[in-house]
Length: 173
Length: 173
Length: 173
Image (spheres, rainbow over the protein chains, first blue to last red):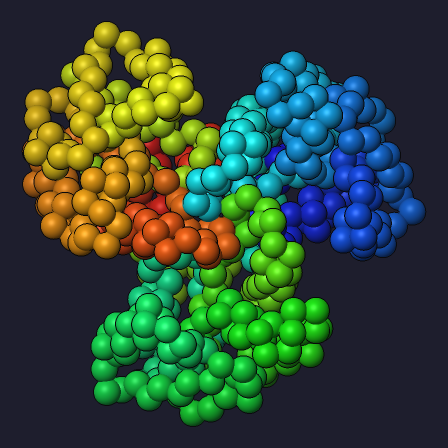
């Protein structure tokens, strides 16, 4: 079972993804792409960690996530837009990302274990003036499309509630 | 019956919310959080007022809305993101809002009358550079999640049309 | 059959709209509102053209699209938000657009042939500071609502996948 969870900021994506992951198996690994570069981010990371109990182990990896998607138990990757942002920062804003994005899609498709992935909808506002912001939303959108095509479920979170874009709602399984 | 109506700018939220409120009872109160601080806003307020007939009374209240949610008849609150913005302006951008937001959620949950609430999706674009804008969308998103959890229906408006996120479509009731 | 396809940037709108148009008839016309004003846009136009085979003819028209919606075969208009932007640039940012927008809605409603229209969701981010950007998203939103009311199907694309806002999913027809 592969699940892509998307939605806007503060739409309940992480909470839904955690609950979905916990329903998929007793052993859980949280693959965090966030780095505590400032106080705002550090506080957010701490808040998320406090929501996970001892059945979870946490791995922090800002860049090389594809090799860490396969593994024993359920893997939750949170979140992919931050990963795209980390890649653009690390490689430079004009460098290609296709190898990394394709590598992740392949790793998700091939993983024998359940994988839950969290991404952000970032393309439903006014076109950003900043070329890097436009590139970021292009890459994030293309990645979401590619992952959605290999996932069994795609869920859009709105106001903390799931809308199934692909796959059956939980109550019907 | 408690209904949360969300959606982007010009997605038909207010029109849908008014129709939904009118289906819920013959006596209606419109609780407006907008203040006519500039010509653009004044024109918008006038346009919305012209869409409501004599069965509606209008109350303008930019800040203290929780005590006005209970009452005889149907209450329509339009809109909550403007209310969050009013609170941030009135209290200062670093002041906590939890008491006000929690108070509204409690008032909605406890109101014996039907309540329809309009909010805006503001978190599906690029992360804003401005810290106040980030805080605004965080607070608006958290409020929407908390209200959604106590509402019977949550509706996402897209191109003037409702998508039910929670609760049954009207034709099925 | 009239179909409105909406969604964020890189949500798979154009690909879905093309597939939907191809299912509606063997003769297809692509009405492009894009102008290759810079290298980024020229590259995007080339990419889209390469995705269409010889059953498609292409017409480029940035402004006067209403008279070109009727015609033999299926017409696909891609995209309407760019058209609104072209109109604002051509007429001036304070000039009224109602005649043009109403004319398109009428042309779509009256066309005897299948029409598929692509638009963008641009109103789910933070309210833009720029008054022109606010006007753009107001006009784009109003146009989407008016077109949705005369279309048989309205589809919201998320991560490359369709969510039907109006009309039955294809597998049910």
